[in-house]
Amino acid sequence: MKRKIKTFIFVHDQQIILDFIEIKKFNQLKDVTFVFVGKRDSSKVKKLNNVIVCNDLPCNIEQYPNLTSFTGWYAIWKNNLYLDCDYLNLFEYDINIVKDFEKVQSDYLDTGILGYIPLSVHDPRYVKIEKFSKEIIESIKKNYGKDIINLINSKSSDSICSVTSNHTFSKKIFEDYMEWVNPLVEDIKNLEMSGHQIERSISFFYLVKNLKFKVLPGILEHFRLDSHKTQGVNQNRFENLYGRLLSLYNRLLR
Image (cartoon, rainbow, N blue to C red; front, side):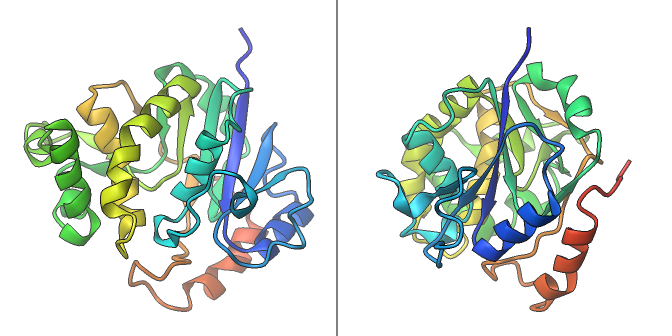
């Protein structure tokens, strides 16, 4: 049975969309839509048939910019913009993928959740840095009675999860995740680090639910360009790496 996959690329600057269209950055993927998040000028892209401007949609949460790309996930979900597909690729703009990405991915779609960047669940960066996880862990306890720290501590030493928001979902699991995370958003939406906490919520969701998932390292590279300036990286990182992002759009990682 043929499976239809839609790819949504989340972008905060219209020039990035125009640059990507010019170099045909994601043309190897069959069905790509750029999702414009935030409230910057979108006049040059809003009429393009492969662009969604979240702030123009009936249901949007663009007033909470620190949620970063999740505002785009919310807009897709609440405005039913995903119903004609079986699987969703939800990707940040600052990535490179391998030439045979879809071929590799296709062997694992039936898992239901795919991540691309692995991290040990016992790595201190995962749940031990409070600003990246404290409030959402408390919200999960409040809303669902689940203790994330105890769950993580119960995992074997070789257990991994997927990090960053770059994930692929079956339609059903995407809907389940969005229903699950929606009440949690109320507790974190105003936090400076809410985007980081939302990223962790993806793996918290599948670990709490004991769902099957697969991490596929080496086929997607995330540049972490830190558009919202919350990672503490070099402030010139965007300028230093953007040219590489454009020139190596089909970089072979494997």
